[in-house]
Structures are given as structure tokens and as C-alpha cells.
Image (tube, rainbow, N blue to C red):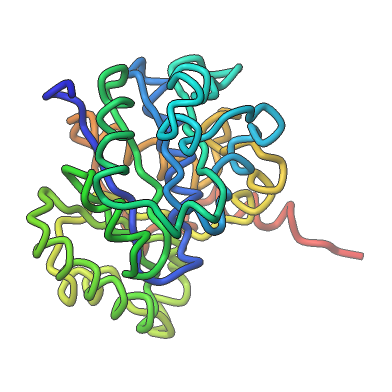
Length: 271
């Protein structure tokens, strides 16, 4: 394994917080910065990473065939046509859950790491065998959560398990942030979440309807060059991962400028 390859687990504990969407967008954003990036779908039960990247129709082999030695790794890796620095290793058949062990995950990740600068592992929700397999092959972690009590509680449990496995550094991404709800105290604030979880904040991702649109199209926002709020957030997180000093967004100031007010006015349906 290349010692300088960054192998990062993207995990959450709670399902539906935007972990796979973050993986897809960070993968594209890092690749666009010129670094060789692989995204590995470790959710063998409910794989979705291929859909979000628009690669579902190009899958021939998966991690299962690589482990069974019925194909080479390069045959299973699906290169993105629009972003050649990015490749996907698809999850195998859900029946893999019956026999996949941490040693198997470590072997497949080590093979991928030999060819890439970054390996992003999209971890399944929960803390069962899928999580244990994924964490066993990881060096670092990004914990994704929403500013909601249940999501934060699950993230806190995951952080404890990451510490047990001596994964470090561990960073936090706060997803689906709604500045208006935070201002009216209807949602946990950024400070509330960081105080509870005690992790360095890698970035915020603002709530953005364009995320749903891009997901349904299989075109991550970072691929299309979108200037939507979430697209800017994803790009900034990728730049921070590369060591750039990018200021964090202040939710209190988001959407308060004249340009934002004008955009909302134009989007308002009069009739």
C-alpha cells in the first residue's frame, strides 16, 4: 500500500444524513483538483454510490469478483468519463454480507490504494458488521451528521467507536444546515453540534434543493460547475482536505445579501 495514500472513511451512524452524496461530490471535487481519487461503495446491502455518480449502467465487475480473483482490479474500477481522475469500485452482491470479513476489506482497499492518492470509503449506516469491515481498512474518518438531536446522538456513538479503532484524524461535516431555522432556534446551531461532538469542523453544507435535482440526474453538483450553495460547500471541503485555508461559512450571514434576496424573489411564483 502506498504510505501516502489517504484512506478516509465517510460515516454517520444514522442513515439518510447525506453521507453518500458527500462521498460522490467530494470524489469529483478532489479529482478536479488533479488528485487520483477512488470512491469505494462499502454499503453492500443498499448500494447507491453508482447511481449518484451516473455510473450504474457501466458496471461489469464489482469488489466481489476482485476478491474472488475472477477479474482484475482495473476491470472492476469504473472510470468517470467526464472526470478521468475519479474511479468507482462498486459494491458487490448483498450476499457478500454473509462472508465478508475485515481482512477482505483491508485487502481490497490496499489494492485500490496502490493506484490512487485518495480512497474515500462510503460506509453503510449503523454500527454493525458493515461498519466494522469498513473501519478496519481506514486511516482517517469524516463523520457526517445533520443538526438534529437523533443524528447527533448516533454520530457521537460512531465517534466513540472510531476512537476505539484508533482512527485519526476524525473530522466533522455538518450537512443540510438551514440558517433560518438556526436563527429562530428551531434547529441545533453549529456551536451546539461541535460542543457535543468535540470534533474539528471540516465544513458545513447548506440545505439546497439542487442536491435532490443533481442526485436524480446522476450528476454531482461538483461535476456540473454549479454555483449553488451546496456545490460551493462541497468544493470548499475538498480544498480544505488538500490543505487550503478556506474560511468556514457563517450560517447567520447566508442568504442575507442583496443577490440572494433577488434570487429568491425571482424564484417566487407570482401566479
